[in-house]
Image (cartoon, rainbow, N blue to C red; front, side):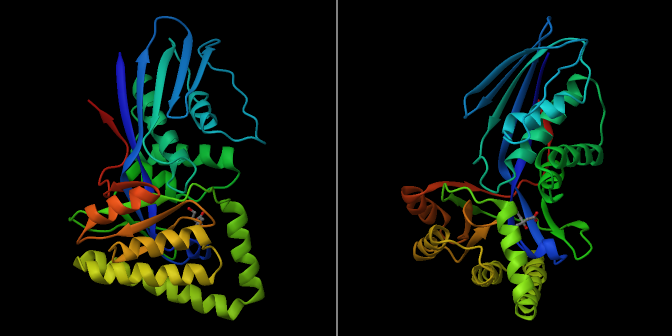
Length: 320
Ligand code: MEV
């Protein structure tokens, strides 16, 4: 038996950081993510391979279960896979190939995409007919267990796909957008530490509360206007709002020299809108160049690790 599943990664288009303060945000599932191939075995072996990091591990089921304890002081992408496997009982072993087709640990939701794709494949293997809501809930639970804390955005995007507006009450509302949203993602290859960056924003908020509140309110207005711009297909407005959001992310201290340089390079190359995405402090920028995406992509990819993507309208799915 061979099972294949895919789960998309995500970018945050608007509202990173302010979402922590119950302000709206917009997240986009992208058509780059994680592919999983599970092949059944006749014995009790579980062979796991993760590419492109070249991780291979051979384990044996005991009483249909895998006994694996991860090291909480040293979180690794494989921990999410073991945590998924640990939640099931198996009659036979299997080979699991996990292919991460996006940047790992760069704010694109790679751990959520790995968790959700592996969960889907294993549920199919064990004849477990889970709903998307169940997948999202288990995946979130796994992220919380391994990371200590996790916003529901990443696992929701990998599960449901599409473009989602997270409102002030943390409800996830799909945005109706029936065009393609072409984006360029460039990676500065410096990992930001989300926990530390969120804490630094909190410090600034405590020190300069009225100023930070005004900035957060402006960011919230940008996110709600961006929702409307998407719904009306107003690409120039969307681009302008991305640039404004970038300026405010700089103001709250999550921008870096490297990210700034990438943002300005992308604008010099012709992108109409560009900003950091995710926590900042490192990770990726997104560039929106609806008029000349190929030229901007080419030039950015000569300087930085870069890929082109669009939104993924579907979340996790089994591949036939
Ligand atoms: C990180 O991808 C996004 C933040 O808003 C943190 C969070 O929402 O958990 C910075």
